[in-house]
Image (cartoon, rainbow, N blue to C red; front, side, top):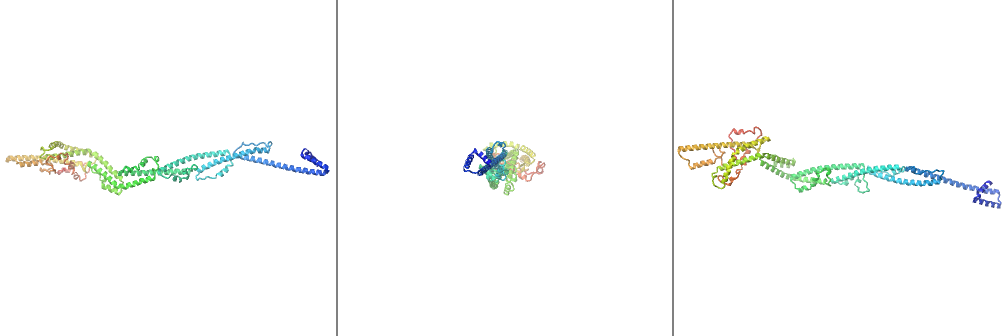
Length: 596
C-alpha cells in the first residue's frame, strides 16, 4: 500500500493533487497519525480516483461508439441516396486509421445534405414529369381515369436515377407527340363538324357534347379528351353529317327539279323564283363546294316543299289553261298546214287526265310539245306542195272569175274599172292554160313525197292524190262538155241556116237575144244536153264592180276542197292499190263535182 501511495504520490507530485497530498502528510505528521490510518486514507483516495477514471473512460467509450454509429448511419444514408440517385463517384471514404471519427462525421454530413437536396430536386422533377404524363394519359384515357399519382411517385422514390428520369422524359415526349397529333386530328374533326353543322343548320354544341363534353369547352385550362373513342366518335359523326348532307342535297335537287317543272308549267313570275335563287346557285356546285351557312337547313327544305305543295294545288287549274294554249298553237299549225291534229291531246281528254291524276302533267306537256314539233316538221316538209296547192287554187279562182267575166254582157262597157278587168282577163286566160300542167306536176310531187315518207299526203283529212285525180277527171269531163256544147252550137247554127234557106225567114230579134243569152249563160259543169248549171249566187253579177277585182272573189280553198271530207269518208290504205287511178270512177259516169 505504501508503494501504491508512493506511486500515487509520485503521480500526484507534479499535479495539484500532489501538493494537496504533501499538505495532507504534513498535517498527518503534526497530528501524528499512524501509518495504518494513513495507508487506509490513501487507499480510499486511490479507489475513489479509479472510480472517477472508470466513469470517464466509459463516457468516452460511449461517445466513440455513438460517433461510429453516426458515421456509419450517415455513410449508409449517403450510400442509399447515391444508389437512389444513381450517383457512384460523388463521395469517397477516407482511411479510418488516419482520420478521426469526428473528422469523418464532419466530412460525410455535407455530402449527405447535398444528396438530400438533390433527392428533393429529383423528386420534384419526377413529380412534374409524372404529373404531365398522367395529365396526357388522362386526356388519352378511354374512361378518363386519372389513376393514383401519389402511389406512382412513392414507387418512383426507390429509383430517382437519371436513367429513370430520362426514361420518363422520353415517355413524356412520345405522349406529347401523340397528343399533338391527336389534338391536330381532333381540331380538324371539330372544324369539319362545325362547318357541316353550319351548312346543315344543326346545333354544333349539342352535336359534339354527345361525343364528349370536353370538345365544346373554350377555356384554356380545360383539356379536350383526345382518346380513341373521341376520335372514332368524331369520325363517325362526320360520316353521318356527310351522309345527311348528301341526302339533303339529293332531296333539295329533286324538290328544285319539281319546282322548276311547276314554274315552267305555270309560267311563274321571276319574283317567286328569286327567293330560291341562292339555293339554285348552290345546288349546281359539288358537295364539297357547298359551304354557305344554313343553305342545306331543314327550314329551307321545308320551305321548298311548302312551295311545291302550294304550286301543286294551283297546278290543276292552270295546267288546263296551259294545255289549252298549247293545243290552240298545235291546231293553228295544223290548220295552216291543212293536217289533222292528234286527238290524244284534245282538251276533253287532257282535262280528264289532269283531274284524275293518273298521269304526270309533265308527260302530257312533253307529249303536246312533241306533237307541236312534229307538226312543225310536217308543215316544213309539206311547204313546197302547199305552195303549189295555193297557186293551183289561185288559178282555179281566176278561172272561175274569168267564166263569170265572160258571161257579163257589160264587160266591154266603158264603165269605171273596165280596163282593169280586161287586163286581169288576159292574165287569167294565160294562167288557166297552165292549170293542167300545175295539176300534173302537183300529182308527181305528191307521189314523190308519199314514196319518200311511205305515207299518204293528207289535206284536211283527205288524200290529196284523190282530190287531184278527181279534179283532173272532172276537168276532162268539163272539156268534153265544152266540146259537145260547141258541136251542138254548130249543129244548131247549121239547122237554123237550113231552116232559113227553106222558109226564107230570119230569127226575130227576140229569138236571137234568147240564143245569145243561152250561149252567154253557159256553164262547163252542165249536162250532155247542153243545159246550163245554176248560176253562182252573186249579187253583183253583170256589172263591172270593184268586187270583181279581188284575186279570190270566190274563196277557192273552200270551193275546191269543201267536198274533200265527203269524198274521203272511208279510210284509204297506203299501198300499190291506193296509188293507182280510181277504177271505180272510170267504170261509171261520175257526177260533176261542185267547186263551191
